[in-house]
Image (cartoon, rainbow, N blue to C red):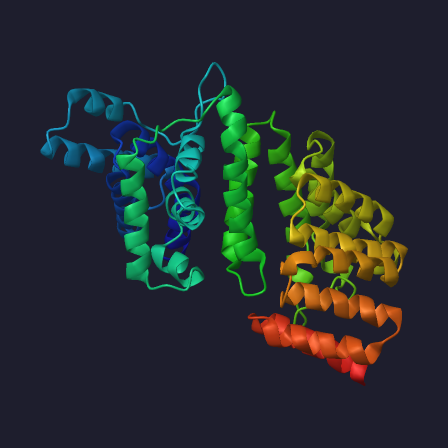
Length: 400
């Protein structure tokens, strides 16, 4: 029983997005596609413990989902063309990305990430439809009830239908225009999983989807850059907390616990990642990931990357990180000066990372009393309990 249930879970994780994407392509009905895929999984949970796991679990699930869709469409008297197309669906293996053929899941990703939807709706719809994450889990991550999230997802699908969003991957200049929006959704999904209070499965799903995107769009440098960035950050996931669950800084982490295979994969992607924003962030992450110790980190290289990133994306947060990098590369004085510039206009007022950055640079400058006070102020402003504890621990270290 347990083995069969595990086989259903494994097959569902792999086949569910392909089944949903294929059924949406043919029927144009999001709800029907999701319902039929879910019913196929439920049927597998009922039959596989009794009959055994089939030789091609994904193909079995596709067949059951297809047959269920056929039944529903026949009863609804849907046009014969759709019925004929559905009978051709057998195994959820993706078609080759040659001669104009594109994986159904890629179409689905671009549809879920359409700019007609609000950013959070794109993230939620991608999680539910492409990744197959249960609505209850998505609701928990967004701090809303399951019923509220269900309504949001329903409205998002209705908006796609009302706006007649085409179920396709754009080409040429349209692809160049739309791709950054898709990557932004995937990166936001990753950060929602990687943050201190995040849902780890979201980071894993974002990584899987970005890897898929890189496979299907191998000529897009920023996709490779984002994949490298995710891999390099995710490589530290097992070393970010101590035995009591407290967050550890890079300096405190046991580097032997980092995933060095993921680091090697991320570094190997950099030559084809170009020089865009994700590539620059990936190179920064690579400087940290490949340093044998915190003391051997190439901070001047990181500072140069942030100089270029600030030129491309002069946001307050990028300028804040640039100030920190310069503080480590060239001394706390220059870092604090750049931090003061980044704060011009009040964009970083009461922003906990800015307070923490000032605290760290102030400590390096030799003023532990003021630094401890700044760390406590950052702890008061932060919402995450693990981050609050880490900041208070740093303040206590300086006060002791």
